Length: 315
Image (cartoon, rainbow, N blue to C red; front, side, top):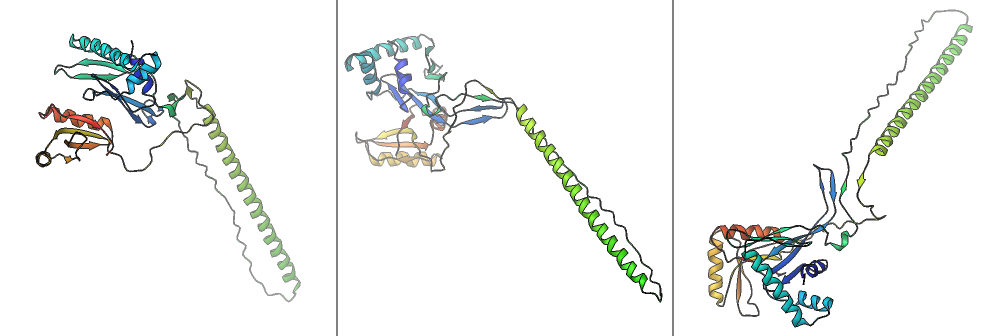
């Protein structure tokens, strides 16, 4: 039985799918982003990871297989165990197992499972129908229109002369008024000409910009729907749901002692309340996403604590 197809189907609806006795496949939502180097827009997606320390049977995968394959729950559990035995045998033989639509798993030199995701499908249902969009860089040209208004000023100098006849003054007043009207008319004509030139330049700029926009070509693999809403991360406080566990103690005093020792080493250690088994978990630290938690766990392993593992739980 290929249980990987059932794991793949459950990842659309659940954040964690546990394979009893083998490990758990986890998902983390990655928002949409732009790769400026390749001019590619990527839609939101779910990133798939693997945690070999989570092996308890939560019943999710077995119930799903029993429902889909029309078999009993016990038969589904036995089928999962048989498949995981085959996987473990292949890994112990230095082979790489490939899980369709999930990725590859192999053992490293230390005997730990290493998962390489290879997800051709997007498990985020909100991004159904969306694909990456590649477009060439948009080059915007700024057209600087300089319109110089030239206004000729013709100063008129009048030399007063004493004459006995006042008819000259009358004609001079008429002449001055005529010149004034002429200058006013010329200024109005010049202002209209400048405005027309400015409008013509603006229209030319708009036509050039529209032409540049129309020449931009977008290569789209699949047509986008008429209205697309991309989910954005809300500006809320991050939930620290991924915790690197140092150990669990029956004695609260011993748990507090372990916290003090880890704090002295520079970790943001803390002690949780007793769980249903009466144990007090002690954490190296808590993180908002699985990637940061996994990086911290690797560093802790390098420092000597090979027993550290990741707990996925909202506190």
